[in-house]
Image (cartoon, rainbow, N blue to C red; front, side, top):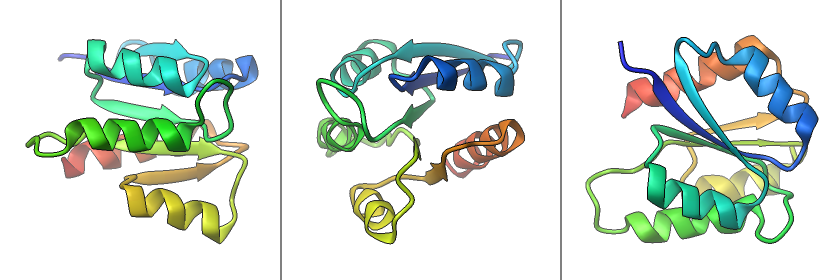
Length: 126
């Protein structure tokens, strides 16, 4: 079985450890970046199956990265599932991301089992 490619954009090393614990390396191929700009570049090069984005990151926010990814996908048959993983849980924050096209929204702190379930449900819908 081929591993699911997951791009994770988060500037918090603690979050990286959580993602590593929650996503079994026999099922997932993980790549980590620390800002939205690098997330967009890595997305273009690697073409992951799923992207996890924090909103508050240096250089470029996750929200701006999400808009860039969606802009680059315009007219394409393929739309990469994107899950926001952030400490921002306000209704406005969620709605802004939904308008741009996210498949999931997780508010930190995230439970490991919750993370894998959300990824699997997003991929199965594609």
